[in-house]
Length: 608
Image (tube, rainbow, N blue to C red; front, side, top):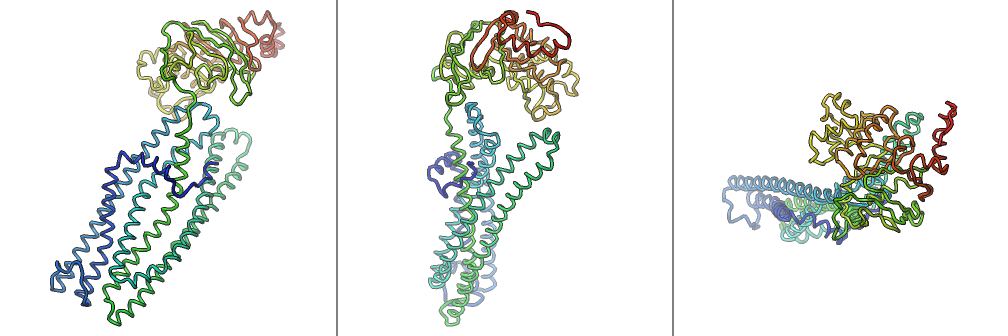
């Protein structure tokens, strides 16, 4: 599983590609970085102001400060002045922190908006074969979860890492200016902090990997069982399904428990080491003060700087995990964006013929994988306006014919022509816009009945919309809805029967007024009454169009001009219904098998 890979902590190639999405917002990032720099300086000023107030007014000492030339001599006025400055620094730091956070969050969201847009555009261009190899859940994870990980990197990772490093640098410089000896004591615990941090990173990385795998398994399990809920309930598998989910849920809980444990001991450990360092500073600093070598203000400033010193270290340790997760997520995302597209429009496409065009398959061979041929040397010609039916056993290659005609897949051998030209010479959108297809499993999108018929084609007028609905016998159903054509359609057409959804699919095909029509088992999932409505509309639907009808129900194709019989990937028979029955070949056997029960019941003989 790709989710198991954590990737490098830092990958320069990936980071350069990620920064491309930040480039349009470089001005905003620069302002945010400036805010962060000034905020880092503000964090340094607080302890210096405290030191000045103590050493100049509260416990006077023979020390100097950068603020001396601006300070009044009177102690109360001086303390009030310093307090006012301190308050101003705190307020400025608050404003800068808010501004920096807001700007980076906004920038991160804009960059991720661009990235998600590119991912969606890529998904729409990928070959259908890619979706055969990759489950929907994985692709959804790329566009949602993985992009959110990158958003966390951009909005609270990269710039704040720079801010933490800046704070650490400024704090160390300030400490060295105040007392090199106390600075050495503070830095003396750093080897221990580094060891603790390394161990934390290992534990947190392992926990993150386990958690991600567990989440992926939970998502997969839920998607599978929610989709198949009806089957699950019919066969009383609820208890078994709960047990399976409990196992996946328990694995996630245990993985997350390891993460809690890692964070649970890391922060107290760093806190303990920081307190140890501060206790050492207190002991040595007190000794220095007693000997007159150090002022109280310097010691208090050291305590304040010490707290500021260890906080960025803790933050950097957490940012390590964010960076590592982001590198892994970016690797998965760019792997999707870099996926080669095999089926593309030619560089200089030919215009699709305006005149009536014949469809030709010339020695076509095709396999979905390697040389497991689904079609073997298939050749035929469909004249303009002709209705062709395709029949055959399951797996004979019927649907594959239409997939190849629409260039969802490209053939390995032979040629497919429309209007005398190889279909690979046409632009994909130009080729496909002349086709309408009605599938066995009708698919409705969230929206309205009208939007599902138009399907984004805005030049379909209201008159054309209503005319298409009426011609496929859908008008009475729509007018019986509370909002008629604006009636809400939920996900996958929930609340509508299969027959109703199929009639919407027929109206959709008719409203787009295609030159070529494909019906792929379009009536196999509807009841007899709905099938009769559809069959009544078929004559109008196929009128003046080149039509390919794939069907198992032979009663729906008897009026076709010709019937093609596919068997094991080969075109074995071709002719009219009566001709094929007379030949007593494969079609005759199919017809006999389909109607034998009916004939036995009625005592009729199949006439030829």
